[in-house]
Image (cartoon, rainbow, N blue to C red; front, side, top):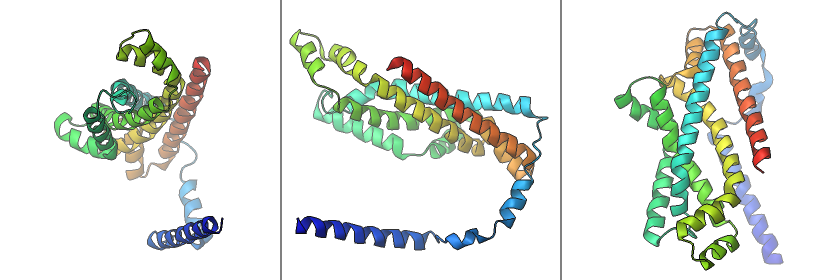
Length: 252
């Protein structure tokens, strides 16, 4: 018990040191919030909102949703089968497991922004490279998350399928996938929300959508349009979260 308490104290002291160093490196200083005048002056320029361009910005918002949806859906379609090769209990052999794990780690280690910059050289400006960039990153993320769900699945149904002579892929399909499907949907809709925010960043490099309009409006000091952009982004994220929750309720 004494050793346990000492170890806790050591971890606590290490945490304090790391927090202190991080605050120093990041110039963390709450006293900088003492003057809100500049912020209030800046935000006052956002209103009243300029709604003249609302129909066009609404179309750009739909484009952003389409980019995020396709990027998330195709990422799931490709990442789902790969996740079975990246799970210890369903992988065919150790070599396949290691290679697939490495591939998924590589794909999720490269940010969508970097994928977008690389794809621009081949595909040019527009929403298509943004979709592919989100797909590539989501393959790595969703493949890793689903593989962990597979490893945590109940082994009983799988063993029962094998006992009756079912092939391994049939067992995976009918014994494991139904168990993890609600959680897979949860991960998909979460990544969908993330992809909406990611597509905004990809708009900075010409990926299209409301993110590109937000960047243009900021650069040209059209702050009354910036407020409309931000409002539409908030509505998109809230709607996706609400619809995703309703779909999960139906599935579960």
